Length: 159
Image (cartoon, rainbow, N blue to C red; front, side, top):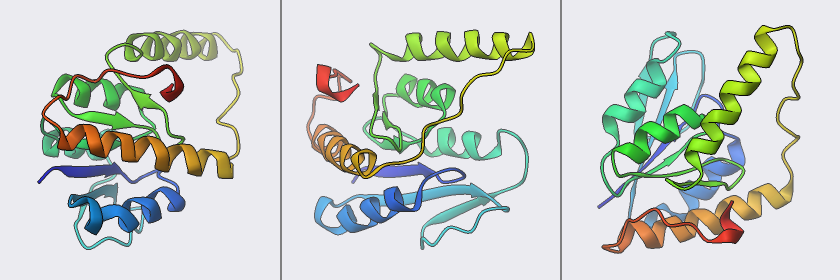
């Protein structure tokens, strides 16, 4: 049985509801990870300290090949992809070996721009389209996790 691991510090409530709704029918273990500052309603939960990367380290340490990780953190997504896990953002973007380098470079450039005094936009407000895209692409990853081919290939409509 594979696991679905949620970086729950910033995971929208709707995503958790989708993951809990599909847990029985898709036969996976749902593991949430969050710092002590966040209350997460899940019976299989790891609470970590307030350290900057404590939740990320717990997610990485619990991820295995074929698991699915739900995170907004592109760096964390890169780490779990390196372990052979699959990864998805709460907005439904499937992270893959084909797109993660671009995302990490974008993150680096934006951080450099902010350090130089520039301002960048935060994430857009969540929409019902995000909820639909998350559920649709999550179910695609569930099928991928069940199959023997975890090649992290991505369809053009998944990014």
